[in-house]
Length: 88
Image 1 (cartoon, rainbow, N blue to C red):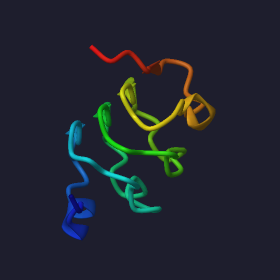
Image 2 (cartoon, helix red, strand yellow; image 1 turned 180 degrees about the horizontal axis):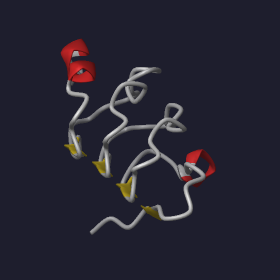
Image 3 (cartoon, rainbow, N blue to C red; image 1 turned 135 degrees about the horizontal axis):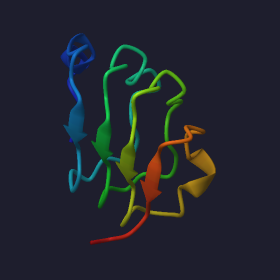
C-alpha cells in the first residue's frame, strides 16, 4: 500500500486511520503539513520506525500496536499525548 502525496494537502484533517495497510514505512515528511491531526492509527502495519511528528502539537492519540517492532522510541514528546501499542 502506498500513501498518496496529495494527503499532505489535507491541512485541516484531524483524524488519520492508516491501520492494517501493510505499510512498511511512512513518507519522511508526511506530517509536516498535517498539523491539525489529533488522532492517528498506524496499527497492524509493518513499520520499523516513525517519521518526525514534532509539528503535530494537536496530537492527542496515536496507536502503533501490531507493527513489526516496538515503536516507543519514536514516541512524540507531547504532554497530552496518549501513545499506545495495544493491539486491540
